[in-house]
Amino acid sequence: MPIFNAPVQDIQFVLQDVLKVTTTGVPGYEDLEADFTSAVLEEAGKVARDVLAPLNASGDAEGCVLENGTVRTPKGFDAAFAAMKDGGWTALDCDPEYGGQGLPYLMGTAVGEIFVSANMAFNMYQGLTHGAYSAIHTHGTDAQKAMYLPKMVSCEWTGTMNLTEPHAGTDLGMMRTKAEPQDDGSYAITGQKIFISAGEHDLADNIIHLVLAKAPGGGESTKGISLFIVPKFLVNEDGSLGERNGVTVGSIEHKMGIHGNATCVMNYDGAKGWLLGDLHKGMKAMFTMMNEARLGVGLQGYAVAEAAYQNAVVYARERLQGRDVTGTKNPDGAADPLIVHPDIRRALMDQKSFVEGARAFTFWGAHLIDRSVRMGDAEAEGLISLMTPVIKGFQTDKGFEMAVQAQQIWGGHGYIEENGMSQFVRDARIAQIYEGANGIQALDLVGRKLAQDGGKHVMAFFEIIKTFIKEHQDDAQMKPFTDPLKAASKDLQAAAMYFMQNGVKNPNNALAGSYDFMHMMGHVCLGLMWARMGKAALDGLAAGSGDKAFLETKIATGRYYMARHLPATGMHLARIESGADPVMALAADAF
Image (tube, rainbow, N blue to C red):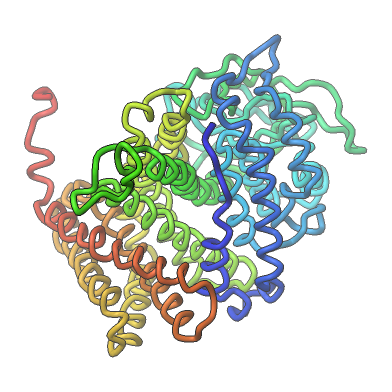
Protein backbone atom coordinates (compact mmCIF):
# COMPACT_ATOMS: atom_id res chain seq x y z
CA MET A 1 0.00 0.00 0.00
CA PRO A 2 1.35 3.47 -0.84
CA ILE A 3 2.53 5.61 2.06
CA PHE A 4 1.90 9.26 2.82
CA ASN A 5 3.35 11.56 5.45
CA ALA A 6 2.30 15.18 5.70
CA PRO A 7 5.17 17.49 4.63
CA VAL A 8 4.74 19.64 7.74
CA GLN A 9 8.27 21.07 7.72
CA ASP A 10 7.90 22.24 4.12
CA ILE A 11 4.49 23.78 4.79
CA GLN A 12 5.78 25.51 7.90
CA PHE A 13 8.72 26.91 5.92
CA VAL A 14 6.37 28.56 3.42
CA LEU A 15 4.05 29.91 6.11
CA GLN A 16 6.61 31.14 8.59
CA ASP A 17 9.82 31.83 6.65
CA VAL A 18 8.60 32.81 3.18
CA LEU A 19 5.21 34.42 3.75
CA LYS A 20 6.12 35.45 7.32
CA VAL A 21 2.44 35.27 8.12
CA THR A 22 2.41 36.94 11.53
CA THR A 23 4.01 40.13 10.17
CA THR A 24 1.72 40.71 7.17
CA GLY A 25 -0.93 42.74 8.96
CA VAL A 26 -3.76 40.58 7.65
CA PRO A 27 -6.44 40.31 10.37
CA GLY A 28 -6.29 36.85 11.93
CA TYR A 29 -2.73 36.18 10.80
CA GLU A 30 -1.36 37.42 14.12
CA ASP A 31 -2.64 34.16 15.62
CA LEU A 32 -0.68 32.00 13.17
CA GLU A 33 2.38 31.63 15.36
CA ALA A 34 4.71 28.77 14.46
CA ASP A 35 3.71 26.62 17.45
CA PHE A 36 0.02 26.99 16.61
CA THR A 37 0.29 26.26 12.88
CA SER A 38 2.63 23.34 13.60
CA ALA A 39 0.14 21.81 16.03
CA VAL A 40 -2.71 22.13 13.53
CA LEU A 41 -0.66 20.68 10.68
CA GLU A 42 0.69 17.81 12.77
CA GLU A 43 -2.81 16.84 13.85
CA ALA A 44 -4.07 17.07 10.27
CA GLY A 45 -1.14 14.88 9.25
CA LYS A 46 -2.22 12.20 11.73
CA VAL A 47 -5.77 12.21 10.37
CA ALA A 48 -4.41 12.00 6.83
CA ARG A 49 -1.99 9.18 7.62
CA ASP A 50 -4.20 7.09 9.91
CA VAL A 51 -7.73 7.72 8.61
CA LEU A 52 -7.73 8.98 5.02
CA ALA A 53 -4.69 7.44 3.32
CA PRO A 54 -5.63 3.84 4.27
CA LEU A 55 -8.94 4.34 2.41
CA ASN A 56 -7.39 5.73 -0.76
CA ALA A 57 -6.56 2.47 -2.52
CA SER A 58 -9.58 0.58 -1.18
CA GLY A 59 -11.92 3.42 -2.15
CA ASP A 60 -10.42 3.42 -5.63
CA ALA A 61 -10.88 -0.34 -5.99
CA GLU A 62 -14.42 -0.44 -4.58
CA GLY A 63 -15.78 2.78 -6.05
CA CYS A 64 -19.32 4.09 -5.58
CA VAL A 65 -22.47 2.07 -6.25
CA LEU A 66 -25.97 3.32 -7.11
CA GLU A 67 -28.65 1.34 -5.26
CA ASN A 68 -32.35 2.25 -5.30
CA GLY A 69 -31.68 5.91 -6.00
CA THR A 70 -28.97 6.26 -3.38
CA VAL A 71 -25.23 6.18 -3.93
CA ARG A 72 -23.26 3.98 -1.53
CA THR A 73 -19.75 5.28 -0.94
CA PRO A 74 -16.81 2.90 -0.37
CA LYS A 75 -16.42 1.02 2.90
CA GLY A 76 -14.97 3.18 5.64
CA PHE A 77 -15.86 6.53 4.06
CA ASP A 78 -18.79 7.12 6.43
CA ALA A 79 -16.65 6.62 9.54
CA ALA A 80 -13.89 8.79 8.09
CA PHE A 81 -16.37 11.54 7.24
CA ALA A 82 -17.72 11.40 10.78
CA ALA A 83 -14.15 11.74 12.09
CA MET A 84 -13.59 14.81 9.90
CA LYS A 85 -16.79 16.40 11.19
CA ASP A 86 -16.10 15.54 14.83
CA GLY A 87 -12.59 16.96 14.57
CA GLY A 88 -13.90 20.29 13.27
CA TRP A 89 -11.85 20.01 10.08
CA THR A 90 -14.79 20.90 7.83
CA ALA A 91 -15.29 24.20 9.72
CA LEU A 92 -11.67 25.33 9.90
CA ASP A 93 -11.87 28.61 7.93
CA CYS A 94 -15.63 29.15 7.99
CA ASP A 95 -17.48 32.05 9.59
CA PRO A 96 -17.85 31.67 13.40
CA GLU A 97 -21.37 33.11 13.11
CA TYR A 98 -22.37 29.81 11.50
CA GLY A 99 -20.25 27.48 13.59
CA GLY A 100 -16.91 27.89 11.85
CA GLN A 101 -13.54 28.36 13.53
CA GLY A 102 -12.76 31.57 11.65
CA LEU A 103 -9.19 30.72 10.69
CA PRO A 104 -7.78 32.37 7.55
CA TYR A 105 -8.35 30.81 4.15
CA LEU A 106 -4.60 30.19 4.01
CA MET A 107 -4.82 27.72 6.89
CA GLY A 108 -7.72 25.94 5.22
CA THR A 109 -5.56 25.68 2.11
CA ALA A 110 -2.56 24.28 3.99
CA VAL A 111 -4.66 21.64 5.77
CA GLY A 112 -6.56 20.93 2.56
CA GLU A 113 -3.32 20.06 0.78
CA ILE A 114 -2.59 17.37 3.37
CA PHE A 115 -6.05 15.84 3.03
CA VAL A 116 -5.98 15.89 -0.78
CA SER A 117 -2.60 14.16 -0.86
CA ALA A 118 -3.93 11.44 1.42
CA ASN A 119 -7.23 10.85 -0.41
CA MET A 120 -8.29 13.21 -3.18
CA ALA A 121 -11.62 11.52 -3.94
CA PHE A 122 -12.72 11.54 -0.31
CA ASN A 123 -11.74 15.16 0.28
CA MET A 124 -13.94 16.31 -2.60
CA TYR A 125 -17.09 15.73 -0.53
CA GLN A 126 -16.15 18.42 1.96
CA GLY A 127 -14.25 20.52 -0.60
CA LEU A 128 -17.32 21.00 -2.79
CA THR A 129 -19.38 21.76 0.29
CA HIS A 130 -16.97 24.54 1.21
CA GLY A 131 -17.40 26.07 -2.25
CA ALA A 132 -21.19 25.97 -1.99
CA TYR A 133 -20.94 27.43 1.52
CA SER A 134 -18.86 30.32 0.15
CA ALA A 135 -21.36 31.07 -2.62
CA ILE A 136 -24.29 31.18 -0.17
CA HIS A 137 -22.24 33.13 2.38
CA THR A 138 -21.37 35.76 -0.24
CA HIS A 139 -24.61 36.01 -2.18
CA GLY A 140 -27.36 34.57 0.03
CA THR A 141 -29.98 36.42 2.02
CA ASP A 142 -29.76 36.43 5.81
CA ALA A 143 -32.55 33.86 5.90
CA GLN A 144 -30.78 31.59 3.42
CA LYS A 145 -27.53 31.80 5.34
CA ALA A 146 -29.26 31.03 8.63
CA MET A 147 -31.10 28.07 7.10
CA TYR A 148 -28.26 26.38 5.26
CA LEU A 149 -24.84 27.45 6.47
CA PRO A 150 -24.65 25.99 10.00
CA LYS A 151 -25.38 22.48 8.71
CA MET A 152 -23.02 22.96 5.73
CA VAL A 153 -20.19 24.22 7.94
CA SER A 154 -20.49 21.08 10.04
CA CYS A 155 -20.99 18.96 6.88
CA GLU A 156 -24.16 17.48 8.31
CA TRP A 157 -25.36 18.71 4.93
CA THR A 158 -23.05 18.77 1.93
CA GLY A 159 -23.10 20.89 -1.22
CA THR A 160 -22.60 20.64 -4.96
CA MET A 161 -22.33 22.85 -8.04
CA ASN A 162 -24.45 22.01 -11.11
CA LEU A 163 -23.34 23.60 -14.37
CA THR A 164 -22.70 21.07 -17.14
CA GLU A 165 -25.42 19.53 -19.31
CA PRO A 166 -25.07 16.76 -21.92
CA HIS A 167 -24.96 19.28 -24.78
CA ALA A 168 -23.45 22.25 -22.92
CA GLY A 169 -20.12 22.22 -21.14
CA THR A 170 -18.00 25.34 -21.41
CA ASP A 171 -20.66 27.10 -23.51
CA LEU A 172 -23.15 27.60 -20.69
CA GLY A 173 -25.28 29.86 -22.84
CA MET A 174 -26.56 26.68 -24.50
CA MET A 175 -28.02 25.23 -21.31
CA ARG A 176 -31.64 24.11 -21.32
CA THR A 177 -32.44 23.72 -17.64
CA LYS A 178 -35.43 25.93 -16.89
CA ALA A 179 -36.58 27.74 -13.76
CA GLU A 180 -40.29 28.64 -13.67
CA PRO A 181 -41.40 31.13 -10.99
CA GLN A 182 -44.00 29.89 -8.49
CA ASP A 183 -46.60 31.76 -6.45
CA ASP A 184 -44.75 31.10 -3.18
CA GLY A 185 -41.57 32.82 -4.40
CA SER A 186 -39.76 29.60 -5.27
CA TYR A 187 -38.93 28.29 -8.73
CA ALA A 188 -39.65 24.94 -10.35
CA ILE A 189 -36.35 23.64 -11.71
CA THR A 190 -36.49 21.20 -14.64
CA GLY A 191 -33.56 19.80 -16.60
CA GLN A 192 -30.60 17.46 -16.47
CA LYS A 193 -27.07 18.11 -15.23
CA ILE A 194 -24.08 15.80 -15.73
CA PHE A 195 -20.63 15.31 -14.20
CA ILE A 196 -21.91 16.43 -10.79
CA SER A 197 -19.25 15.51 -8.23
CA ALA A 198 -20.72 14.30 -4.93
CA GLY A 199 -24.18 14.75 -6.44
CA GLU A 200 -25.61 11.88 -4.41
CA HIS A 201 -24.08 9.89 -1.54
CA ASP A 202 -24.73 8.41 1.90
CA LEU A 203 -22.43 10.64 3.96
CA ALA A 204 -24.83 13.47 4.85
CA ASP A 205 -28.45 13.98 5.84
CA ASN A 206 -29.08 16.46 3.05
CA ILE A 207 -27.36 17.70 -0.10
CA ILE A 208 -27.67 21.35 -1.09
CA HIS A 209 -27.38 21.66 -4.86
CA LEU A 210 -26.49 24.99 -6.44
CA VAL A 211 -28.02 24.83 -9.91
CA LEU A 212 -27.64 27.13 -12.90
CA ALA A 213 -30.86 27.51 -14.87
CA LYS A 214 -32.65 29.94 -17.15
CA ALA A 215 -35.59 31.89 -15.77
CA PRO A 216 -38.05 33.73 -18.03
CA GLY A 217 -36.90 37.07 -19.41
CA GLY A 218 -33.20 36.36 -19.21
CA GLY A 219 -32.40 35.93 -22.87
CA GLU A 220 -30.32 33.23 -24.51
CA SER A 221 -26.76 34.10 -23.46
CA THR A 222 -24.98 33.44 -20.18
CA LYS A 223 -26.16 36.88 -19.07
CA GLY A 224 -29.63 35.42 -18.62
CA ILE A 225 -28.60 32.54 -16.35
CA SER A 226 -29.65 32.47 -12.69
CA LEU A 227 -28.41 30.41 -9.75
CA PHE A 228 -30.74 28.46 -7.46
CA ILE A 229 -30.51 26.62 -4.15
CA VAL A 230 -32.14 23.23 -4.65
CA PRO A 231 -31.96 20.94 -1.59
CA LYS A 232 -32.30 17.18 -1.87
CA PHE A 233 -34.76 17.34 1.03
CA LEU A 234 -36.86 20.44 1.56
CA VAL A 235 -36.08 22.28 4.78
CA ASN A 236 -38.86 23.29 7.15
CA GLU A 237 -38.92 26.69 8.83
CA ASP A 238 -37.63 25.16 12.08
CA GLY A 239 -34.62 23.69 10.23
CA SER A 240 -35.90 20.11 10.23
CA LEU A 241 -35.99 18.09 7.03
CA GLY A 242 -39.24 17.83 5.11
CA GLU A 243 -40.25 15.88 2.04
CA ARG A 244 -37.95 14.71 -0.74
CA ASN A 245 -37.49 17.33 -3.45
CA GLY A 246 -37.90 16.58 -7.16
CA VAL A 247 -34.21 15.88 -7.73
CA THR A 248 -32.89 12.37 -8.35
CA VAL A 249 -29.70 10.73 -9.52
CA GLY A 250 -30.07 9.13 -12.95
CA SER A 251 -26.76 7.29 -12.95
CA ILE A 252 -23.17 7.52 -11.79
CA GLU A 253 -20.27 7.83 -14.19
CA HIS A 254 -17.68 5.07 -14.59
CA LYS A 255 -14.51 7.13 -14.63
CA MET A 256 -10.78 6.86 -15.18
CA GLY A 257 -10.05 7.95 -11.61
CA ILE A 258 -11.39 9.48 -8.36
CA HIS A 259 -13.53 6.36 -8.04
CA GLY A 260 -14.29 7.09 -4.39
CA ASN A 261 -16.21 10.22 -5.35
CA ALA A 262 -19.65 9.86 -6.89
CA THR A 263 -19.88 11.69 -10.22
CA CYS A 264 -23.58 11.81 -11.00
CA VAL A 265 -26.16 12.54 -13.64
CA MET A 266 -28.76 14.64 -11.80
CA ASN A 267 -32.37 14.94 -12.97
CA TYR A 268 -34.48 17.91 -11.87
CA ASP A 269 -38.20 17.34 -12.36
CA GLY A 270 -39.97 20.47 -11.17
CA ALA A 271 -37.71 20.55 -8.11
CA LYS A 272 -38.25 23.44 -5.74
CA GLY A 273 -35.43 25.95 -5.89
CA TRP A 274 -34.78 29.38 -4.44
CA LEU A 275 -32.92 32.17 -6.19
CA LEU A 276 -29.39 32.76 -4.91
CA GLY A 277 -28.20 36.28 -5.64
CA ASP A 278 -29.79 38.44 -8.32
CA LEU A 279 -32.10 37.20 -11.07
CA HIS A 280 -30.26 36.67 -14.36
CA LYS A 281 -26.94 37.27 -12.57
CA GLY A 282 -26.21 33.67 -11.71
CA MET A 283 -22.75 33.54 -13.24
CA LYS A 284 -21.53 36.15 -10.80
CA ALA A 285 -22.67 34.05 -7.87
CA MET A 286 -21.44 30.80 -9.39
CA PHE A 287 -18.01 32.26 -10.05
CA THR A 288 -17.56 32.72 -6.30
CA MET A 289 -17.69 28.95 -6.07
CA MET A 290 -15.86 28.28 -9.32
CA ASN A 291 -12.89 30.54 -8.55
CA GLU A 292 -12.45 28.91 -5.16
CA ALA A 293 -12.76 25.52 -6.84
CA ARG A 294 -10.12 26.44 -9.42
CA LEU A 295 -7.61 27.29 -6.72
CA GLY A 296 -8.55 24.02 -5.03
CA VAL A 297 -8.05 22.07 -8.25
CA GLY A 298 -4.66 23.72 -8.77
CA LEU A 299 -3.84 22.49 -5.28
CA GLN A 300 -4.99 18.99 -6.24
CA GLY A 301 -2.49 19.09 -9.10
CA TYR A 302 0.55 19.34 -6.86
CA ALA A 303 -0.92 17.58 -3.80
CA VAL A 304 -1.40 14.31 -5.69
CA ALA A 305 2.09 14.76 -7.17
CA GLU A 306 3.43 15.12 -3.61
CA ALA A 307 1.98 11.76 -2.62
CA ALA A 308 3.27 10.11 -5.79
CA TYR A 309 6.72 11.66 -5.24
CA GLN A 310 6.95 10.32 -1.69
CA ASN A 311 6.35 6.79 -2.94
CA ALA A 312 8.80 7.24 -5.83
CA VAL A 313 11.52 8.25 -3.37
CA VAL A 314 10.94 5.16 -1.23
CA TYR A 315 11.11 2.89 -4.27
CA ALA A 316 14.20 4.62 -5.67
CA ARG A 317 16.01 4.06 -2.37
CA GLU A 318 15.00 0.41 -2.02
CA ARG A 319 14.97 -0.98 -5.56
CA LEU A 320 18.36 -2.39 -6.61
CA GLN A 321 19.13 -2.04 -10.31
CA GLY A 322 22.50 -1.59 -12.04
CA ARG A 323 25.72 -0.08 -10.76
CA ASP A 324 26.66 3.55 -10.33
CA VAL A 325 28.92 4.45 -13.26
CA THR A 326 31.21 6.42 -10.91
CA GLY A 327 31.75 3.51 -8.55
CA THR A 328 29.80 0.89 -6.61
CA LYS A 329 27.66 2.34 -3.82
CA ASN A 330 26.23 -0.90 -2.44
CA PRO A 331 29.09 -3.44 -2.48
CA ASP A 332 27.23 -5.94 -0.31
CA GLY A 333 24.24 -6.03 -2.64
CA ALA A 334 23.64 -7.46 -6.09
CA ALA A 335 23.22 -3.92 -7.45
CA ASP A 336 23.04 -0.29 -6.38
CA PRO A 337 19.73 1.40 -5.55
CA LEU A 338 17.98 3.27 -8.32
CA ILE A 339 18.55 6.61 -6.63
CA VAL A 340 22.27 6.63 -7.49
CA HIS A 341 21.54 7.00 -11.21
CA PRO A 342 21.49 10.54 -12.67
CA ASP A 343 18.31 10.03 -14.69
CA ILE A 344 16.43 8.87 -11.61
CA ARG A 345 17.78 11.90 -9.73
CA ARG A 346 16.56 14.13 -12.57
CA ALA A 347 13.06 12.69 -12.35
CA LEU A 348 12.98 13.06 -8.57
CA MET A 349 14.33 16.62 -8.73
CA ASP A 350 11.72 17.50 -11.34
CA GLN A 351 9.01 16.32 -8.96
CA LYS A 352 10.48 17.83 -5.81
CA SER A 353 11.17 21.25 -7.32
CA PHE A 354 7.73 21.45 -8.92
CA VAL A 355 5.78 20.38 -5.83
CA GLU A 356 7.59 22.74 -3.48
CA GLY A 357 7.35 25.66 -5.90
CA ALA A 358 3.66 25.00 -6.56
CA ARG A 359 2.96 24.83 -2.83
CA ALA A 360 4.47 28.28 -2.33
CA PHE A 361 2.56 29.66 -5.33
CA THR A 362 -0.76 28.27 -4.10
CA PHE A 363 -0.21 29.53 -0.57
CA TRP A 364 0.64 32.97 -1.93
CA GLY A 365 -2.63 32.84 -3.86
CA ALA A 366 -4.52 31.91 -0.69
CA HIS A 367 -2.78 34.80 1.09
CA LEU A 368 -3.97 37.17 -1.66
CA ILE A 369 -7.54 35.93 -1.12
CA ASP A 370 -7.22 36.65 2.61
CA ARG A 371 -5.92 40.14 1.86
CA SER A 372 -8.82 40.73 -0.49
CA VAL A 373 -11.53 39.39 1.82
CA ARG A 374 -10.19 40.45 5.23
CA MET A 375 -8.68 43.81 4.24
CA GLY A 376 -10.64 44.84 1.16
CA ASP A 377 -7.35 44.95 -0.75
CA ALA A 378 -8.31 45.61 -4.39
CA GLU A 379 -4.75 45.03 -5.64
CA ALA A 380 -4.69 41.59 -4.02
CA GLU A 381 -8.08 40.81 -5.54
CA GLY A 382 -6.81 41.79 -8.98
CA LEU A 383 -3.64 39.74 -8.61
CA ILE A 384 -5.43 36.55 -7.57
CA SER A 385 -7.89 37.02 -10.43
CA LEU A 386 -4.90 37.10 -12.77
CA MET A 387 -3.21 34.13 -11.10
CA THR A 388 -6.23 31.82 -10.80
CA PRO A 389 -6.09 30.37 -14.36
CA VAL A 390 -2.32 29.89 -13.98
CA ILE A 391 -2.65 28.11 -10.64
CA LYS A 392 -5.36 25.88 -12.07
CA GLY A 393 -4.01 25.25 -15.58
CA PHE A 394 -0.24 25.13 -15.15
CA GLN A 395 -0.20 23.24 -11.87
CA THR A 396 -2.63 20.54 -12.97
CA ASP A 397 -0.74 19.99 -16.24
CA LYS A 398 2.55 19.71 -14.40
CA GLY A 399 1.03 17.79 -11.50
CA PHE A 400 -0.16 15.08 -13.87
CA GLU A 401 3.25 15.06 -15.58
CA MET A 402 4.98 14.64 -12.22
CA ALA A 403 2.63 11.82 -11.18
CA VAL A 404 3.60 10.06 -14.42
CA GLN A 405 7.28 10.67 -13.62
CA ALA A 406 6.79 9.08 -10.20
CA GLN A 407 5.09 6.09 -11.80
CA GLN A 408 7.94 5.84 -14.31
CA ILE A 409 10.49 5.45 -11.54
CA TRP A 410 8.68 2.29 -10.51
CA GLY A 411 9.05 0.93 -14.04
CA GLY A 412 6.76 -2.00 -14.82
CA HIS A 413 5.77 -2.24 -11.16
CA GLY A 414 4.29 1.25 -11.46
CA TYR A 415 1.89 -0.07 -14.09
CA ILE A 416 0.55 -2.76 -11.75
CA GLU A 417 -2.59 -1.61 -9.96
CA GLU A 418 -1.72 -3.24 -6.65
CA ASN A 419 1.26 -0.91 -6.16
CA GLY A 420 -0.89 2.21 -6.23
CA MET A 421 1.16 4.40 -8.54
CA SER A 422 -1.35 4.18 -11.36
CA GLN A 423 -4.06 5.56 -9.07
CA PHE A 424 -2.08 8.76 -8.58
CA VAL A 425 -1.85 9.14 -12.35
CA ARG A 426 -5.54 8.40 -12.89
CA ASP A 427 -6.69 10.69 -10.09
CA ALA A 428 -4.44 13.55 -11.18
CA ARG A 429 -5.76 13.43 -14.74
CA ILE A 430 -9.19 14.87 -13.96
CA ALA A 431 -7.71 18.05 -12.51
CA GLN A 432 -6.70 19.13 -16.03
CA ILE A 433 -10.30 18.77 -17.19
CA TYR A 434 -12.84 19.85 -14.58
CA GLU A 435 -13.55 23.37 -13.30
CA GLY A 436 -12.80 24.60 -16.81
CA ALA A 437 -10.50 22.53 -19.03
CA ASN A 438 -6.97 23.91 -19.16
CA GLY A 439 -7.34 25.24 -22.68
CA ILE A 440 -10.17 27.40 -21.35
CA GLN A 441 -7.94 28.56 -18.50
CA ALA A 442 -5.34 29.68 -21.06
CA LEU A 443 -7.96 31.53 -23.10
CA ASP A 444 -9.28 33.20 -19.94
CA LEU A 445 -5.76 34.30 -19.03
CA VAL A 446 -4.87 35.77 -22.41
CA GLY A 447 -8.31 36.83 -23.59
CA ARG A 448 -9.58 38.40 -20.35
CA LYS A 449 -7.16 38.58 -17.45
CA LEU A 450 -4.16 40.23 -19.14
CA ALA A 451 -6.25 43.21 -20.26
CA GLN A 452 -8.35 43.37 -17.11
CA ASP A 453 -8.49 46.89 -15.66
CA GLY A 454 -6.29 48.14 -18.46
CA GLY A 455 -3.55 45.60 -17.82
CA LYS A 456 -3.05 46.96 -14.30
CA HIS A 457 -2.66 43.60 -12.61
CA VAL A 458 -0.14 42.00 -14.95
CA MET A 459 1.92 45.19 -14.74
CA ALA A 460 1.77 44.94 -10.95
CA PHE A 461 3.06 41.37 -11.22
CA PHE A 462 5.98 42.47 -13.39
CA GLU A 463 6.73 45.20 -10.86
CA ILE A 464 6.83 42.65 -8.02
CA ILE A 465 9.47 40.68 -9.92
CA LYS A 466 11.42 43.79 -10.87
CA THR A 467 11.47 45.03 -7.28
CA PHE A 468 12.61 41.68 -5.92
CA ILE A 469 15.47 41.46 -8.43
CA LYS A 470 16.55 45.03 -7.73
CA GLU A 471 16.56 44.44 -3.97
CA HIS A 472 18.92 41.48 -4.35
CA GLN A 473 20.99 42.44 -7.38
CA ASP A 474 24.17 42.89 -5.31
CA ASP A 475 23.83 39.59 -3.44
CA ALA A 476 26.14 37.07 -5.11
CA GLN A 477 24.41 34.16 -3.38
CA MET A 478 21.12 35.16 -4.96
CA LYS A 479 22.40 35.35 -8.54
CA PRO A 480 21.46 31.71 -9.33
CA PHE A 481 17.90 32.84 -8.55
CA THR A 482 17.70 36.43 -9.75
CA ASP A 483 19.49 36.06 -13.10
CA PRO A 484 17.23 33.26 -14.43
CA LEU A 485 14.17 35.04 -13.02
CA LYS A 486 15.12 38.24 -14.83
CA ALA A 487 15.58 36.43 -18.15
CA ALA A 488 12.31 34.52 -17.78
CA SER A 489 10.43 37.68 -16.86
CA LYS A 490 11.74 39.38 -20.00
CA ASP A 491 10.46 36.45 -22.07
CA LEU A 492 7.03 36.80 -20.47
CA GLN A 493 6.92 40.54 -21.14
CA ALA A 494 8.00 39.96 -24.74
CA ALA A 495 5.15 37.47 -25.18
CA ALA A 496 2.63 39.93 -23.74
CA MET A 497 3.96 42.60 -26.09
CA TYR A 498 3.59 40.22 -29.04
CA PHE A 499 -0.08 39.74 -28.18
CA MET A 500 -0.61 43.50 -27.97
CA GLN A 501 1.03 44.10 -31.34
CA ASN A 502 -0.38 41.13 -33.24
CA GLY A 503 -3.53 40.00 -31.44
CA VAL A 504 -5.74 42.91 -32.43
CA LYS A 505 -5.36 42.57 -36.21
CA ASN A 506 -5.60 38.78 -35.97
CA PRO A 507 -7.00 37.43 -32.64
CA ASN A 508 -5.84 33.94 -33.58
CA ASN A 509 -2.26 35.11 -33.02
CA ALA A 510 -3.09 35.54 -29.35
CA LEU A 511 -5.34 32.51 -29.00
CA ALA A 512 -2.88 30.16 -30.71
CA GLY A 513 -0.24 31.18 -28.18
CA SER A 514 -2.43 31.23 -25.10
CA TYR A 515 -1.51 27.77 -23.83
CA ASP A 516 2.19 28.50 -24.16
CA PHE A 517 1.68 31.79 -22.37
CA MET A 518 -0.09 30.08 -19.46
CA HIS A 519 2.83 27.68 -19.06
CA MET A 520 5.36 30.46 -19.47
CA MET A 521 3.64 32.47 -16.76
CA GLY A 522 3.45 29.39 -14.55
CA HIS A 523 7.21 28.94 -14.81
CA VAL A 524 7.81 32.61 -14.01
CA CYS A 525 5.50 32.41 -10.99
CA LEU A 526 7.29 29.33 -9.67
CA GLY A 527 10.59 31.06 -10.42
CA LEU A 528 9.52 33.99 -8.25
CA MET A 529 8.45 31.59 -5.51
CA TRP A 530 11.78 29.78 -5.66
CA ALA A 531 13.66 33.08 -5.52
CA ARG A 532 11.71 33.99 -2.38
CA MET A 533 12.31 30.56 -0.86
CA GLY A 534 16.00 30.74 -1.75
CA LYS A 535 16.29 34.08 0.01
CA ALA A 536 14.46 32.77 3.08
CA ALA A 537 16.72 29.71 3.24
CA LEU A 538 19.88 31.78 2.84
CA ASP A 539 18.72 34.12 5.58
CA GLY A 540 18.05 31.15 7.85
CA LEU A 541 21.53 29.76 7.26
CA ALA A 542 23.13 33.15 7.86
CA ALA A 543 21.23 33.55 11.12
CA GLY A 544 22.05 30.01 12.22
CA SER A 545 18.35 29.32 12.72
CA GLY A 546 16.34 26.37 11.57
CA ASP A 547 17.40 22.98 10.24
CA LYS A 548 20.71 23.47 8.38
CA ALA A 549 20.33 20.36 6.20
CA PHE A 550 16.74 21.28 5.33
CA LEU A 551 17.71 24.81 4.31
CA GLU A 552 20.65 23.63 2.22
CA THR A 553 18.37 21.13 0.48
CA LYS A 554 15.87 23.89 -0.20
CA ILE A 555 18.53 26.06 -1.85
CA ALA A 556 19.82 23.21 -4.02
CA THR A 557 16.28 22.30 -5.09
CA GLY A 558 15.55 25.91 -5.99
CA ARG A 559 18.71 26.23 -8.01
CA TYR A 560 17.70 23.10 -9.91
CA TYR A 561 14.36 24.63 -10.88
CA MET A 562 15.98 27.87 -11.97
CA ALA A 563 18.63 26.08 -14.05
CA ARG A 564 16.57 23.24 -15.52
CA HIS A 565 12.97 24.45 -15.79
CA LEU A 566 12.85 28.22 -15.95
CA PRO A 567 14.66 28.33 -19.34
CA ALA A 568 11.50 26.75 -20.83
CA THR A 569 10.16 30.30 -21.13
CA GLY A 570 12.43 30.75 -24.17
CA MET A 571 10.83 27.80 -25.91
CA HIS A 572 7.32 29.05 -25.15
CA LEU A 573 8.20 32.52 -26.43
CA ALA A 574 9.47 31.07 -29.72
CA ARG A 575 6.22 29.17 -30.16
CA ILE A 576 4.12 32.25 -29.39
CA GLU A 577 6.05 34.43 -31.81
CA SER A 578 5.52 31.90 -34.61
CA GLY A 579 1.95 33.19 -34.63
CA ALA A 580 -1.25 31.49 -35.69
CA ASP A 581 -0.19 30.48 -39.20
CA PRO A 582 1.45 27.12 -38.31
CA VAL A 583 -1.49 26.27 -36.04
CA MET A 584 -4.22 27.15 -38.54
CA ALA A 585 -2.43 26.03 -41.71
CA LEU A 586 -4.61 22.97 -42.36
CA ALA A 587 -8.22 23.19 -43.44
CA ALA A 588 -10.65 21.50 -41.06
CA ASP A 589 -11.25 18.63 -43.49
CA ALA A 590 -7.50 17.91 -43.72
CA PHE A 591 -7.38 16.35 -40.26
